[in-house]
Image (cartoon, rainbow, N blue to C red; front, side, top):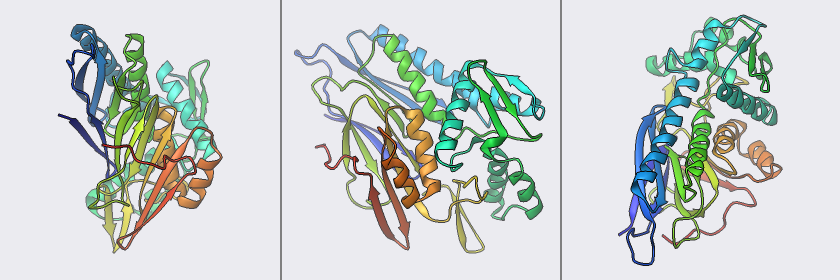
Length: 342
């Protein structure tokens, strides 16, 4: 009997389909599954091993790593390292940060430059305004919107990774790692599992996935991706190993104000929520990259976004836009052309 784990992210369903039957005479490895709530979502781990105690210890250590990263990168926890940094920072003064925060911010800045600011973790002041706007179903007040925009721009953030220092150039800046932190946590959890000797493993941060060596007897992990382009139809299944996949979408997170639909995904360059429904799935070598690029490509749009993907080595994407119940699907040249059998 197949076991089916299902997660939803941004209106896009990613499912891990595992058809292995633990305990067969010719297969000494058993399947173990673990869950923990972190970063506002359910993190799950599936791994294969010969000994339950060792599997339990490895999974606990990996999930502890996720919980630690949550306490560092959270925009919601008032005592997170990220929030404390923003609260204490003085304009132009370098502040010491942990290795994890330096690492994720440094990668964020690299993606910001790669995407021309379509990905930008300084978007925090605008994120805060739009959260209130979605609750109240009103556009942000014009004066507060202008003030927030003055605090946004990746050039206002400096990160010195080697010495673990961060500089915010303007007072009142607020960083938001919502577009990269889950992917980063997934990668770090996979590292912990590998150090414990578990390479046949999968970590799922509610749709931000990393998979290692294939399950026993298979050539890869079967990942089901349901996008805006397949409503009411069985979604395609990809067979992946030693890679990562992430999706950015807005099916369930939007607000309609004065007859116009605004996504929870913000364009840092304009300060506005996206107005076209879309889902973007990215395959990359690591979940940090997949997570950040899925967010960035959503903002860039299908033409500019796909051009970037085509010239970025080791990255593939599926971009679906939906206008008036009509879907347009764009795949990068290297996107898997055939679905795996279920």
